[in-house]
Length: 346
Image (cartoon, helix red, strand yellow):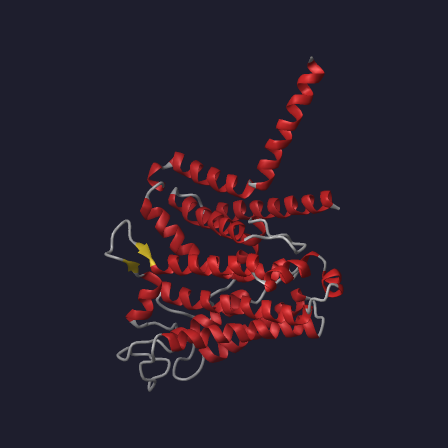
């Protein structure tokens, strides 16, 4: 009887283990929210949720860009500096006419979409350069994007230091641009929906379609799973990598534009360390460091976990230094868990 009972319990135990393994990221997110809410029930308000989503929106777009590269088995360290470059570019061309320290004193008011597209194209160009260096010259992604990160910061600093700005923080942004990052659908109130959150959801939807319903998405997973097998199967790996890195750069560019609109300004130091946050959110969200595995919903959950940590722990008065320790532990645990799954599969 004991042996029979043990055999009956084993399948159930395996099912529980499988469920926990497949949904660990969502379990962690629920536990985090529940733990903070038990400490302070005010955390479970719509206003708090809206603030977390607003702060996480630009991070989500940047993390989705990083996920493109990570799924191919690469790493992009340039994303944070691209965010800074595109924030400065867009902000420099969208200041009010009566602002005392205009970046371009004689620049007329441009249609809102023009500077935004210029900034996104700048991000796309940086991503395309990364893709060319990685695919055409076989430079490891870590080294290629490390070099790009340094160069982009230098270019942005030179641009930021131009006369008459001379490295002064860019402010006085136009109301229509600020509204993009801080405005709401409908009348202002506790249940209004921010524009920036809707934009992030729309981008997540588009990325999901690319990941799951397009040839580029299938090729991306194939390249990350086994590049040599992808080449043998007839996939043009070089061309696909260039497109993937370019898309990632465009998403970083959009993230930079929205970050400038949300905060109402920009400096050349915007985006500093964002690349590590983006990679961490992807890894915590189940994007494999070995390539070939990752989902949009997992990435978004990873971003929300760090959003809850940053906002929630500050909400209950936990020291920022403890927050860093907690974030570091979560990152290490997620990578260890990912490597363990990879070794078990092998």
